Length: 124
Image 1: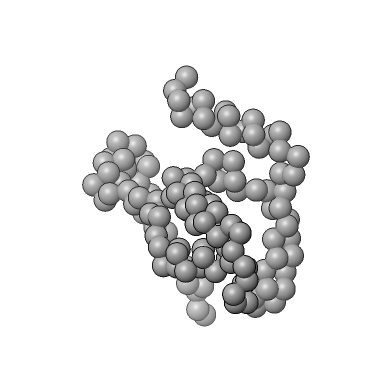
Image 2 (image 1 turned 60 degrees about the horizontal axis):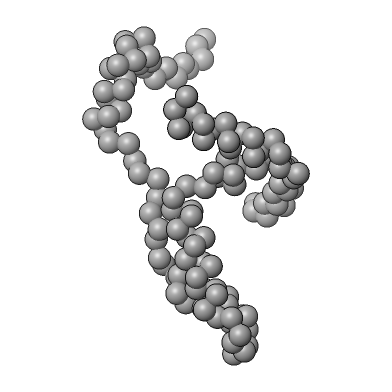
């Protein structure tokens, strides 16, 4: 078993043991819609940029401990807004084109399926 397979099993175990595996989603535009969905995988296994963002949020918010209100927001919220505004923690790296081409080639000619053409209804 590779470490990736082990990690997958661990995430699946966490998902199964979660007392609240479903979340409520409220969308307000273009009209209000409320629905249930399963928690995303990243709730149990966050990506590296998500971990970095959460850590930075905690560090910045902790610095504001014990301060008094000076504006409309709590001191920690003001500090976080000021420090983390516009900061990027990196995204998911894009797969290089050469690697995509190599992967398609390795999968064989049957794996590369051309886009179907849009069929127009016959006119009489």
